[in-house]
Length: 346
Image (cartoon, rainbow, N blue to C red):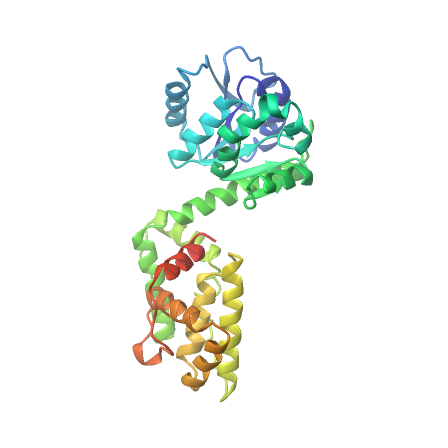
């Protein structure tokens, strides 16, 4: 894994010790590069490859993009936040599909923001600080108070507290490396090829209808995508020869399906629902006898009938449901698309 760190101008003196400590700690696990100003003196740089340039408002675009494409890092990690050039680098990397990490090192705490608020901070917040918060793939904060401030400024997800110390521990290195890997895996999952998705569809379809798993022929890259997608969507244990289709006795199937629909609706709102949840509901619907009218009447009373119709649409695309086993007609509207995106990008 290759990480490109960016630390420029006013951020250098204050945060360089944290950046060098971070790169020293993570060096056994990742390849670290640093983009910084030409005049910066960096001690103990044996495990850090440094790329220095003269930076100004006119040259930053060409200079940074040249280094970005020459290195092609997995992650661009920017440090410090009150420098506009730092925001430019994050924004340029994000616009080109790179994963971006952002560490403000306490500079986004309420105490720091209030310092010279009307003179300096307010226009910076409006111009580029809030967009910077929204554009970053992941944010690392030093304290809970700083996290609370970012929450009030509009950032609520993909954020973790990792206090930086002058002599970080092995736990610190493992924590940062795990966050890097988590974001890289999530990005690769979003890039799943059509061939990989077809393979997953085929496996789930055969498991649902013939109770067997076909052998897949995937390239090494597609196999990696397949494994990542199945892990993220909790399908790994389902796609085994030992999987048992859920079956229930008379009367129990309705209550079980009803409970699964309610749980799935709640999980969907929290972005915790998975394709495995959809498949399990589908397998229960297709392989049990129950009164469909009674089920739909109960769901309609609780306002869940249209939700199930959208789930049936997603399930049909995921693994294929025989029309005679659908408890209701599928519904494919804007909310269905939104639900698919929530599942895919959980």
